[in-house]
Length: 379
Image (cartoon, rainbow, N blue to C red):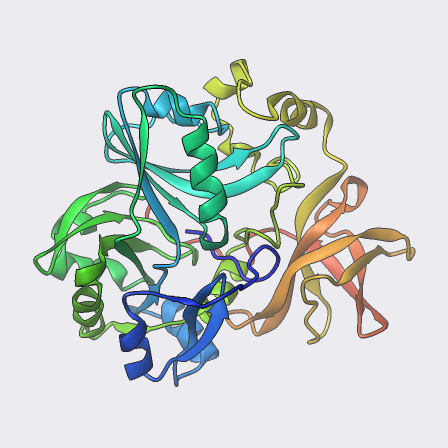
């Protein structure tokens, strides 16, 4: 699922806390303001150890992502109603399956990216980004026809169990979830606790996202942490893991001024949707698919060891303006810096030489394939 850190995630007023707040503190987490919430950025082991544990052998990492927005759409026309707001094929999404999609605006820009699952023929389950939940959910509600209603689930927590050992943990505690295919979704009992789970995540690893009633969240988290494979991980590791996996971060890599085509997310537009383009910004997105977009999100490998952070200016090899880094940092799995950013279309080919303006110096870099670390989702 998606994580936002910077733009669009400003904190105003008292911070909200998740149902696991006391557990985080008991585990020694360093808490930080994040999208209006008090969230754990790391535990005593540190971001590097948490990151590597999530990718290692038979291990798994447990993340608290309860700040994300959860909601349901009810009614026989729920799928058609949501499909009018997104480019994904929602009416073709079978019960027990989940899909990644985006809400678009009239200019083809991305209001948010979200997960949509079909829980029953007349019920969809949604997960949206924390900083956008109070934008997304009213936006969706305002466009619903008679007979379709939106129900917020502010009384639920959300945990993410990620890593090569996640399936073994679920096989012991929630066998029904362990049998899910990639992007499978449904009600499961985990250690006797009734949950909604999907086989998905935001790290590039196999794993599960688990929605649980808030009153049972700590019991579930403690049960998972009692498993020998599992250690807690904070938002720092979550961010470095998703960067290695080449996954977009709302507010950095995608926003209301970015189209799915520019972002390399054209695959979210289902084949059937490409026959009518009946969603916000459809004509603009169609034109970019047919004729190309002026800029493209690419993977970038800086030469040397200096990381290029978000906001770094990208230049062509000749020194001409090329674009901007939107996410960047150190990739623990590669022991090297990596970045993503938008460049002019003529500079987007793999192997293209670039320059990054880091601390007043133009450092050499090149365009490379995404993801930086291969995905290991169940296939």
